[in-house]
Length: 605
Ligand code: ADP
Ligand code: MG
Ligand code: ZN
Image 1: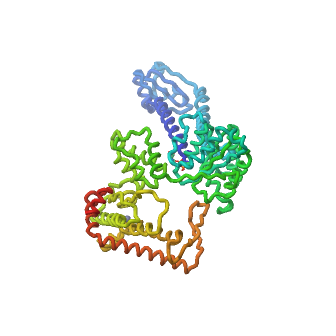
Image 2: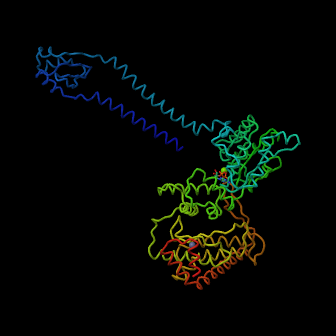
Image 3: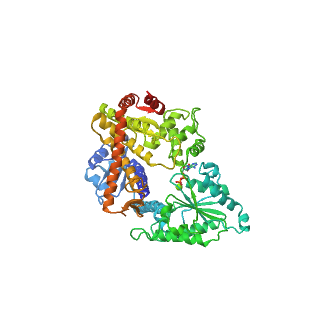
């Protein structure tokens, strides 16, 4: 719809330009000046007139000095009669070259053709523009069969992707080697009577390289790659999605061996019958068609269907049955080593200063996905260009890490002196509590430069990545999250809105401890509440209570108890270390940011 409006605007602009040019030309013909009959009479009296042409009621006059003029007379009054009536002598009239031009010829030409042709041209133009539009969007609905399949041929060297372009995710790559080998040497497997999996489901959080890996499989096996995204199936009319699936498989089967890749399978593959309203017919039909196609080909013809999803838990169980997507390949978030490898891949072709150490960058980016890391190096390159530097340095990279995590610095966000002081004590509170509790990750940086929504920030980074967290770590982290609040309260004897996010985070974490992780002694090892997903919106929006009102009260009181204990812990720590709190806050006010080394040094003194 947007591009429809855009094209219409373009059309209007072209039209305006054309009509502008047109009127420019037509005004050229009107450069002659209109005069009244009186003037004409007096000009004739003075013998200035050389030639007169009569066109119906228009008199075109050419003077001796070659000026062109025109005047009008009554249609049926002959000019000579008119002039005589005004008392001009026949001799004077005879001196003038009088021509009468028939307007009949011009009538047919201009008066007939222009009114017909011009609107016709405009109409044709309009139809042309709109048809381009319609081709773009609306017509899609009418081209039922065509799937918007993107095909990547193995010949396409420029966009060819191989396992070399994918760093980390070693297990996933190993799992897929088998698929590659089958596509390369099918006979080896068939002669042993082995059945190769038809469908492989790639599972992992967004941005961890599912799409990339699928393409790499095709690149390694040197087979064509048919790529379609689940969300593209959902169209205006019921049945379009299903016929697209059919078409997708027809195309792929003409190009065997091949890989079909259905990206974002969860868009169509959600559990059937779980939606709101009737609009899910389309999805269900599409899903059914996928199942039909998966069942419909022999496992050894050389077609492998890959699919990607970040929500395998919500997929329809029928998709995961044997003979369908029965293989799952899990893609994890990259760990420290993987991050370095991914950074190396995306560092290709970028000039780095010799001081840049990608290992260190990997250490500083826990929780980043491959896509985040790519984005990070891109941000660093842009920042370097902005600073007019030739090589990307470590400072630019560190700045970009924070930018990717927290949003860009807002230097223009000016705080008053008092506000700066509050922020400094707030952040110092977080940092000191985190530093002194062993369950918190080491403090990497404290800053009172506002970024994104935060007025200041304290970055904590794990030394080693952990996949399991225990109760005491949670408690320490809640205490450090409340450290900012505790510090404000202690120093200024009041609290500000700046702690709102901290409180929310602490509460959420505490609630999870109690209701999901079984970390409350009173409530014991069970979960409370069943998360239900409203499929229509694709988000967890309702939670079904599977416990009594009494338990609900107990949960609330338990959450409050844990939070208060943690808050007390933070307060005690800050009271004991009031001097250090002052030192760190003062230093923050002076320098705005403290890096890990500086911070640790101040904490030691
Ligand atoms: P997903 O499909 O899982 O959401 P993508 O495959 O689209 O993620 O990844 C987005 C981009 O992130 C890729 O184009 C690639 O540049 C980068 N990326 C992600 N994971 C990796 C990885 N393991 N190695 C190299 N680059 C990666
Ligand atoms: Mg993807
Ligand atoms: Zn805070």
